Length: 394
Ligand code: SF4
Ligand code: SF4
Image (cartoon, rainbow, N blue to C red; front, side):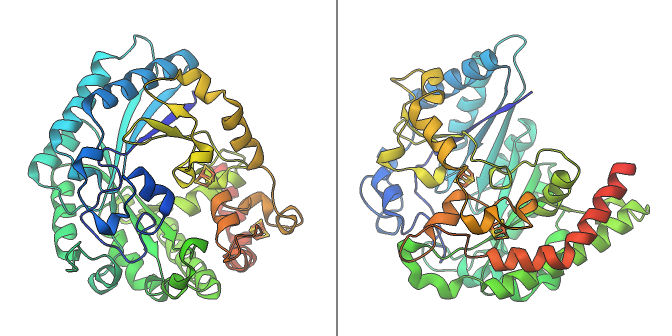
């Protein structure tokens, strides 16, 4: 059964943190959706937040569409910071899901991506009882995390996020950890991996910070392609060591999966990877902004890619619109370097947005980290293949 991913922005782009590398803090297209002001200029524009009526509309139309197509339906709450909304908003979301559920339809699941700062015991109990999967943004060791992930007032946030994460674990909430690889975290793969691994997450997800054309002056905050290649190689060897131990019966608990490596193994085993950037084309995600506007991807919240409104338009028509088809079709055009690359089957050229927007002149080409991936695949490709064969046999 396929899956419909519906991404909602309950608190629009509002946030209680000012991370150095925040995408929304300098991206004018998102700022426009937030009432024309950049996030840093107005943190709490509550009048721009998603209404209960909009939420119900989104839930009902998504469930109807998923049921008609035979899809599971995954609601993803993100931001800005979605936990700025009170729990009442999320209780309503669950109530609407129950009220509008359809007999025989696919499974419904919920995921919230949060910086973890606002969570408290009530949140933890709610997330546990309603089976929400939580994604917590944590860059690892205190010094690494606090370097760039500061509160809106400029204070360190690690201590509080870590305490809240422990509370989630104690109360049985399933969580993943999302870590940004920047110029600092890239330097400490071993210490940081061990620290993150031992926190009890289901998955670790490492996202490289990519300097963007929108503000290339932040290039210094990003890892260099060379450093990132070495980081991947080291991380893979640490993860593989733990996997080998787990496979030999050395204790499942010690093993925490890393989403990227797991998906590479899936590709090698002929299975479909999860993340859109590892598929051969963009996927039709539904991004629902607080005002009901629908876009095909969070990176393409732009007037030119506005597919319609969840209130006024039919979801079936939105999903089958010429603009959505163009979004998917155009993502299949890879740069010639990728088409001629021996690693294409594994790398797949990466995310189309990242591929095309990171150069100061906005020119398309293989991504900024192309040389990192080549280095990684050349060093570890054989090991990955051996691992995939072994897993297939077992
Ligand atoms: S642009 Fe990137 S994130 Fe968006 S759908 Fe395509 S691959 Fe996924
Ligand atoms: S390694 Fe570089 S050239 Fe090869 S597929 Fe990936 S981005 Fe394209």
